[in-house]
Every structure is written in C-alpha cells, then in structure tokens.
Image (tube, rainbow, N blue to C red; front, side, top):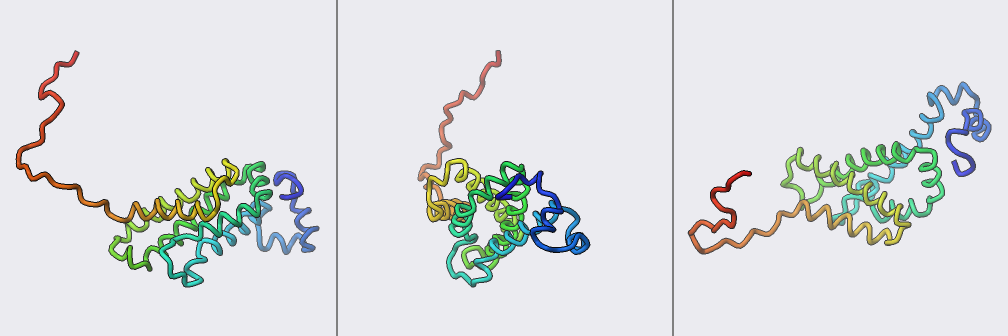
Length: 188
C-alpha cells in the first residue's frame, strides 16, 4: 500500500512479494481484503491490550500516547488507507478491539470496581468511540498536539465520566424555588 493503491494490488502481487504459492495463500485468506483485515486485526489486538499484558499500574485504560505515536510514524500508510477508502474499516476494527480492552482494563481498576458490568461495557464502548474520534480529529489537524497531550485529554474525558459530579449545594430555605415562567401562557 506504500507503493500503489490497494485496489490495484492483486493477489498475484502479494504472492510474488511473499514468495508463497496461490494454494498456500488461499488456505489462509479468502482474498486480499481478508489478508489486509487480518493484519489490521492482529495489530489492534496487540496494541489495545498492551497495558493489560504489561501489567501497567497506572489509571490509564488505553495506551493512547503509544498508539498515536505509532500512527504518526506510519502517516504514509494511514494516507494510503484513506486514499483506498480502507480507513473506515480499520477504525471500526480498532474501535471494537479497544472497547473490549478498555472494558477488561476498567474491570481491574480499583476506582471502577463499583461499576456494573453493563455500565462498564457501555462506558468502554463510548470511550473507544471517543478514542477514534480524537484520532480522526488529530489526523485532520496534522498532529498539531503531541501524543502525550492526546493521552491526557482522552483519560481526562474518560475519568470525568466515571467520577460522580460533586453534590450541588442545597438551599437552606424550604420554600419552593420561584419560577421565572408564568404559570399559564396563552398559545397563539
């Protein structure tokens, strides 16, 4: 994909480059798209679970800084995927992998031990969507902020959604609050 658009790459190109037979290729993949998505799947599985596999002790739920740094290094490939209209498939796969890994990570953190499995799963999926939305924004803005800043923004957003808001001050008055809307209003 660095050399030519995805749509112009044939299975024969892959066979020649990999020096494998057609039967070997088809015993593992149904077509070139299957090969591509299989590699993408392996990449996201490895990246999304990095904190879990490395027994990270921080409150980070996803390796955002490392992921964005890698994407920055692979900008040409990302551009090739966008030009070949593969970026949406890639983002969808990545979002699914990160959602599962974030859910697993949240299940192990003391600060989220009180979350129900349903709420944790919903939060993980929303957070993965947020991660890929931030990535899309970051790519469109030319990586104008550092991967470390994007990591901080992502985690600040995530934890603000988990930490309950501070209680509102209560009024010492027992009177009902005055409404600024008239009790009756004519419709015209």
